[in-house]
Length: 250
Image 1 (cartoon, rainbow, N blue to C red):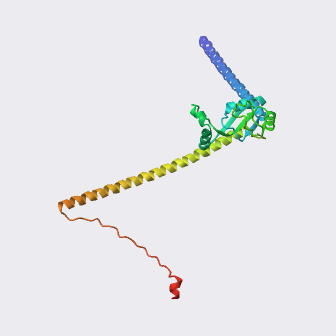
Image 2: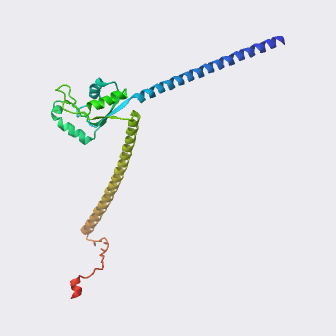
Image 3: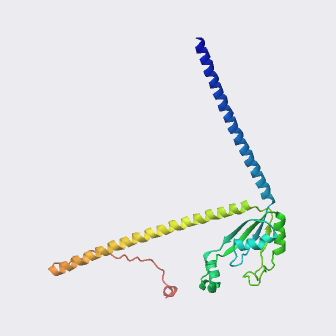
């Protein structure tokens, strides 16, 4: 009996130790999760503070041939740039720009992507305001051999505008564009189905006419009587009309 009690006590102690170890491990995992969450919160807070300090400039006209890399090279000398977004032009505008660069394309150059407008995010609002005030309406300049030498800046500082506003607007425009595209595709499918239906009907009518002609030809060769298919009576609608004034006076 005494040995059994010692064994029971030993097993209970082992179970208690295992339970305490599991509890300590769970507690450590919870502490790690809390630490990671606090780190994420601090990081997000720092990013939000940095975003509040940033400023966005709007470029209403992007010179032909300019892209993100060239724009960053021109504007980075005035301050640190975070992000750049250039809105591409439609196909007709791109064709017009490519027509102006026929000589370059004949020489084996690639097609240049044309952009209509752009947004530039600076690391600080003061730099963004200074750039807008300094460059707006001024000649781009640089080297005389540059294709942007005689172009002018059209840049404006957007007060109380954040990059998230731009991304939301882009997502909204994309959703509208996809919705319009879906409607156009459904309309094209309806037109296609209607056209195919009419084609099938015309084929069926033409096959019926051919069979009737063959039948009449066989009957003519055999000397039988021709069976003419009954035609539908033509409906002539008559509408009551008033007589002219001259006839009524007579």
